[in-house]
Length: 476
Image (cartoon, rainbow, N blue to C red; front, side, top):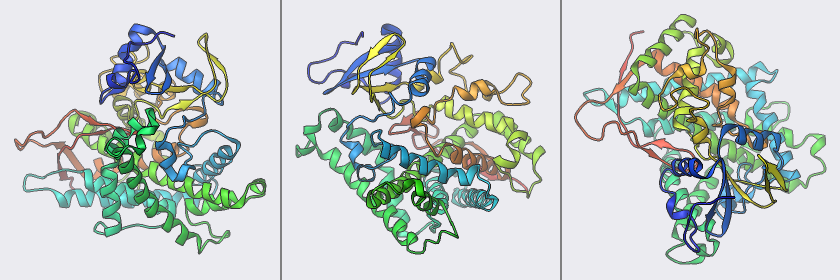
């Protein structure tokens, strides 16, 4: 396969800056949809183009289901992370338990659980608006990041293990503080993935040690909550996702698993749901505020549609009102497409030899999928650089374009598709609709710079650089 010229030992690492998906997209124009790069000690295949990505992840799902043996992956959930651990039969059972547990809250027959999830999301969304309105200065301007972070943590904490935190809770404050630094730590620690021996070098290994410290704090936050919660577990009273996971793990078809190993994997799955849940909700709600302020005309269209569907004091949910709110859903999908929340999917690793687009790929190859390029591909999207919810709507605006929704890769695809995708969709729908029902969001225009930067901070997913918005309450 063709490859851009790199440096000895380093390879192409130095050429991938803060927006690696942009550089990879440039190289794809020169070298084709499939090309090779060198990332330290790893030869890496880059896959570009929606059709290639979908074929690899869906048609050859098992072959591309692995995760590379990166040092940072071993830090997530003590090496048993559902998201970062390598593909295996044990991983399959862990994923199956997780999917079944999450479905109880989004598509299961137990209406009480589905109502509880929707009530929690609605309560936290309204609390978010209350806190945003209370935080503004005399010009009605605020930086929403910390408040959104608290709200996102609370909604998934409540759904995951039945606990909420007050805004000033020191445990929550510590957790939010450490996670603000997580993306930076994750980015700088990549050097150890490419040259593993560096983790033991005093200065160069500092980034890895910082990431390890962040992960220790995260695990110390999640695991005691799970341990305490499971002391009162009752199979006849499933209270939340943590209980659902425990219940699923003890069904007869899991009896062949080592009990201690299974419990560790279930605890790791719970921590994955919590970690991915708060991170996704936090960043999508933050981006939603950003795009509402940037494009007030679209914000008003969301508001108008919601007003037609639900009475001012009525509760709105994706389950009951999604079909009547195609514009709201299209707007959310367009935020995900335009930002490419995770422009490069988590690295994959071939589990066996496979052929993709005529290219033979051996087992044990690191594979990078450039979702950011697929989300801006002019062969798929009309005017791809423009933010336009119409990308996801039929011409008359009456319903979603299912083929466009199918081309969204924000949650991955195939065996590695995020199991919490549906839960995220339900939560984000409630947050977005609650924001526009209760408030007007506009750009901060108080002369303080930078008020509204179009820059991003990268990690596993990307978020906008710190920004401020003007937020005012709508009349009841």
